Image (cartoon, rainbow, N blue to C red; front, side, top):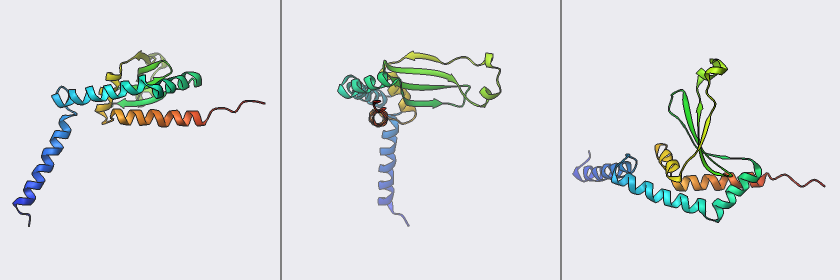
Length: 153
């Protein structure tokens, strides 16, 4: 049977969980501090030598990296990408309705430039941190670089 010391330990665990979750509550001081710190880290990466090299690779290869794919169950989804020109956001038609809709009813995707903070805030909805994004970019850029075509003789 649990005793009061076990309850105290459990209470501390709940307090720590609540503090962690506050970093994901929009508008809270913890959220603002976490977003600001993540944005700075992400911007530093993008503006540093690795970020510049990744964008150069993407531009030369004509490829892009999907950073966040957010589908909330509605008729449109939002995709955040990094391409050779920087960060972009695409709003696209998604879901089963697309398969059955008249082509004229489906709006073409819109592609807009976004800031690192916008990407970080979108990532927080999916519990994706700046570190996660940086590691994703490095991993995907490595895969693209590993598949460079051989020069023709």
